[in-house]
Length: 415
Image (cartoon, rainbow, N blue to C red; front, side, top):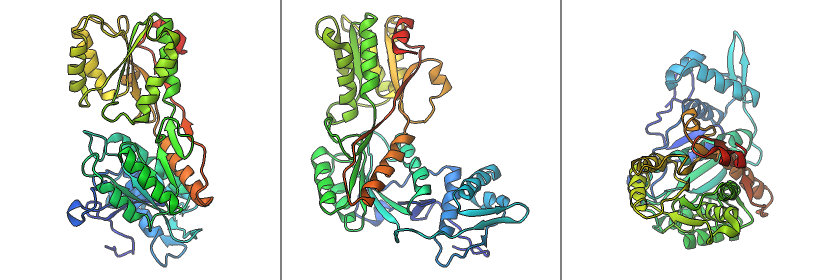
């Protein structure tokens, strides 16, 4: 609806489109359509709500240069955010030439011609990881990372499609129904079974609609993907553990029955390469794959493993939420970290690891923002150049902290 001053009043609970500046995520109710569930539960941050509100004004037909915004205080009241949040967003929009701030007078919208005509429409084969909700933190971090690129590029509409149940082919039909309208496709891990993924990607590419993957679709893929460097840190860990005398190394991850998870394959390969020719002779490498995620499942899994004659003395835990359960099981068995067991986990949800984590753990930090930025930049580049393939891009992962690995290992790791 519209207020008296002409600005759009957005009901965030019922609106069909969640809109960022140059970024729209299409929503649809499961009860209103036979297509798979959409990303209904995505929660916008305060700054994103302000951007959403203003984007409605930028997109309003007939917008003239100089349309005046309400005061910062009024915008904050309407959107339920703080005044500093409004000021921060307006400063960013001012720097990008979308608003004009006149101190003592007010803030004014600036219209901007859209090069290339209509907004680009990008379909997303959305992540629905087994046992997780549609609004899992990893997905939210990836989606939030789209904003910096969208602010600087084309108006873009993103249509996120996720299956109601993992492994169902209903998402294939929904993605193919988007093909005539879409300009490109982003495929997230676990969204489709490998056969369906390859079929959908092939249909898009044959129609001249470029496809970009988050993580390579296969271990040996070389083009059109953006991924974290899973291999490098694992190689360093394997080498450090071998040189420091560790004998029984474990990778705790999801591998079966989702063995096509390239991240797990690369970490396993990295550890094996780091252990080198000692693998199978003096050092063993085992994969633990719990049936469920979370701390309690990790605790129960480790209890079973620790009943064996030779417990692990080094662990890479790819599921950060499992660490507490693993520590609990180790402590109950009388094993100390890091004296008896070297324990390294993954931190990928946020750009900066929490201080509490750094105070107690050694982590492989895998920031998400470079992934989402890289995905959009690569897709926009492919669209601009008529679908020409681009080399795969790996973003850096770093080892941080040092309290759950021994000093000798920290020295070998450069911590």
